[in-house]
Image 1 (cartoon, rainbow, N blue to C red):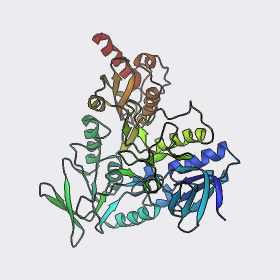
Image 2 (cartoon, rainbow, N blue to C red):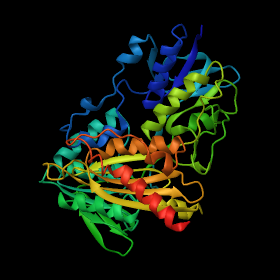
Image 3 (cartoon, rainbow, N blue to C red):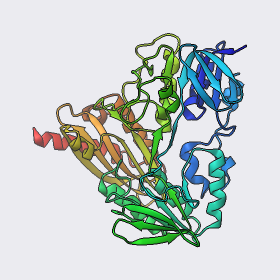
Image 4 (tube, rainbow, N blue to C red):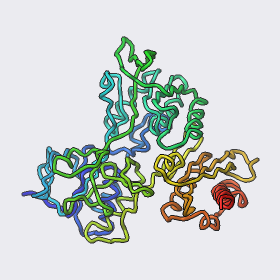
Length: 454
């Protein structure tokens, strides 16, 4: 006889596990089943650090299950073969069929495989998969080789390069098709800063470089570029981003958007009753423009899991998804880069009337304190409303929390005049000075710019 659960979740990564815990905490008597393919699940953002700071030990980056098990949630390790919408059931490979009242797709994403590049599937070619088994194999391989090429200069690519370069015996090259790395999230100043941080660590950067083909050689792999130039390495690691994992969803008739993500409304419901989608596999709409965007972040998945639990069994109209704010941050060779919302180059591309305000300061006070780092704040402000709609940040570790402050300001739709009167706590070892707190000084500069334009 088919066992039925109140909630079945397909996928047990950040989105699925967070949703499972949230549902059990709110509805203690509801039965919840998570179906996922591997016993151990990696922390996706922590994968690069396996290859450096975690000394190749994959088990140090496993997301714990204790919270879910303690809440008395059920877990089955199996592959889902089919979803039957009419029957409200999920068929698995080994454990048979499970019924549901509510179904949540949290099937995540998978690496973009460049099948347009000949040799993409050679033996010495790897991808940054979110698979415990796969990454364990890659970690062993990386330990044995010297010359590594990373194709793709986004966050994961640069973080992988930064970690691998901790071993000074390795030769690491990042290959990026765009004029500078991190070009999807930052303007050129910040992207070039990140590159310089890597170069200081001994990493080679090849921008404006298109890979045409990979060829197997006696000792490794030959990479052939568009200009007929080439280089030989031991292994290649592709890091070209991710795409939603939605085959199960499309097979059962759920529509997807142009990015391949499952279409949902602001309550994360699909067009089929009692079926929801969250995380990387689900549609994202930009907070500023409302347009579909391709944004895959664990922080977004976490927020969506909190929204879905409030609307799963009864709709709470005030607890819906108001739109996705992309909030990125990374640390490259000890230098921190972060962006949130719509930065100036995006505003120009989307024809949003905006202006920017740049402030250069420090993250401790006085700046003579050892370990003080310079900070740059580049705010984007809407011209008519003076609303803060985006920011780019560079500096020390304090940038990791400053970006969250601005993310909150964007979601609260604060304008520069509201923000200017905010009371910020300061401490010499932790923040800029009370009279020169970087975010406030950037907002002050924006106000002076707006004064002169009136």
